[in-house]
Amino acid sequence: MTARERIRWGSATAAYQIEGATDGDGRVASIWDEFTARPGTIARGDTAAVACRAYDDPEPMLAAIAWLGVETYRLSIAWCRVITGPEGDVNPAGVAYYRRVLGELRVRGVKPVVTLYHWDLPQWLQDRGGWADPGVIDAFVHFTEIAAREFGDLVSDWITINEPFCAAFHGHLSGLHAPGIRHEPTALRAALMQLVAHGAAVRALRAADPEARIGLAINLSDLEAASSSPEDVAATRRADLVENRLFLEPILTGRLPDDTAAHFGEPALAAALDGIDIASAAVPIDFIGINYYEHNVIRAAEHGNDPIVRGIEKLPVPEPRSANGVAVRPDGFVRVLSRVSALAPDLPIWVTENGIGLWDYLSPDGRCNDVERVAFIDRYLDALEDAVERGVRVEAYYFWSLMDNFEWSHGFQLRYGLFYTDYPSGHLTPKASAERYRERISRAAASPVRERQAG
Image (tube, rainbow, N blue to C red; front, side, top):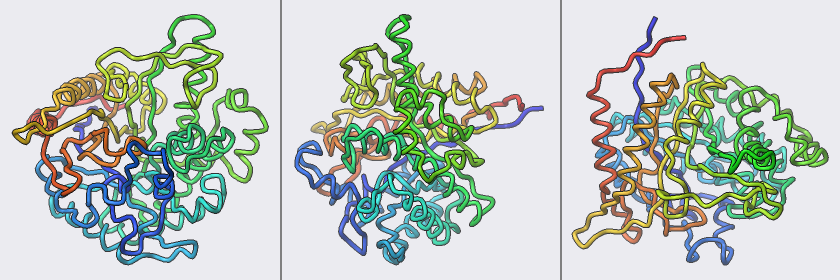
């Protein structure tokens, strides 16, 4: 028996990176507002106070989505724009804004996918301990229930949490992200707490809408040992634990990897698990979202260069690479997708992020000829086709990002968008990559729907 299957094409953004209006219409402060206010945390001292002006005027964003011809659009809802504080009160202005955007997407025939947590934890929760405090789970469930109630008639596809690795380890160990903590036991606690919160949010969404499609988005790395030496192989396995298996295994099996205690230490693991049940992370989901950016070659080193995994060195990657040194490796993309497919063959995969950061600029004729991103799109979409031909069940692909935006610690220097953002005005200009992605979407829509063997 065969089943007809076609990839849904989309693009994505996150609320904090595009909306601006960080102190408007009842929005309360997030951990990123506090973090960006600290000197030296963000390139050039940039903040997201204005960003892409999408809160004040979402029309340019909506027009760009329509121009691109995507079928689906991934956005996040800012927790701190919807819930006003510890009492759990709802902000009508925030609800009205998201209902407007979601409604306009539906009118344009674009299916929204809503991410509930894309790193913008309310500061009042951080003041209580943030992701280290078990009370955050009840607060997240309350936010989830409110989101389902207020937007459930417009949304049927949900992502609970985006990249818990980054929120945990860059937020609580490397210090590169908010809240800017540097403490490994707290980072481990934040990682596991997010996984438990994911499970609780799935149950809340199921109760609100049994027909909803629900998953989460995890960023997975393709890792390669620098040599076959036992030391390099062991170093690569440690990196794989922290960057991949620590998230994959609890989600899929409800258990932590066997080497978790050996890496983090028994006392730290016991403290991280205090008051939570990691088995509750393994709730049934309808898809698993994969954000793919990283390929790294790992060498053992007593004094390593990685701020997160002890005793490893990540070697410089050859060209082609992004402006900030990230490897362009479509073969690694295929390996990551194939790995997840082998672990969970019946679980659909959504590529919830994939993109490249560049130092883009407008030429004198007003165009952005981002030839590196054009090549990236062709190579990665060809690789995606290859993975599907190998039997990987990919249902959706979201290019990151729709438009240039506030790129976290890189501020406004690094650009990932298909559309060039003029930050002073909010004007969006399609880049050469937007034209290529639109062409690839159109070509895919005109192609015969592939057949795959149903298992």
